[in-house]
Image 1 (cartoon, helix red, strand yellow):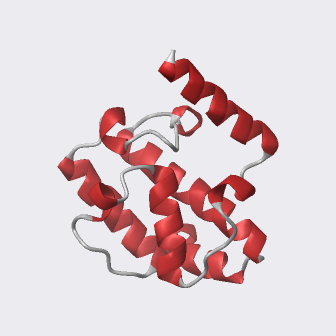
Image 2 (image 1 turned 120 degrees about the vertical axis):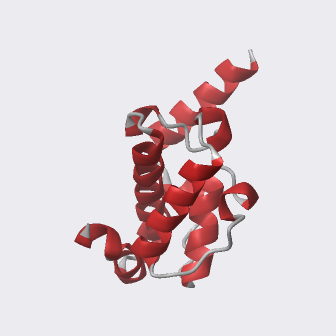
Length: 123
């Protein structure tokens, strides 16, 4: 759990170009843990409620985020920022450590995979 508590410090110490990727990976990991699904199968652009997140799980995720980042969040945090991607960008701003846009933090392969998944969902 020490690593989780150090997330805020790790993000702040990282190069600006790496911050979004670090935050995204950490929030994705926390969300996957709470949802009890494989991290690799968690779509960062899907609303967490569509993945099975309920209000109790939302509270658990918010608590994990607060401990990891050392910040206090409103009860509506996960309903205001309903995807891992949106939540990650918001949390970067909360830390005062905005990095480049999330799209810039993703590898070309990851970005293409996400785009392909979105097209498949629309078909």
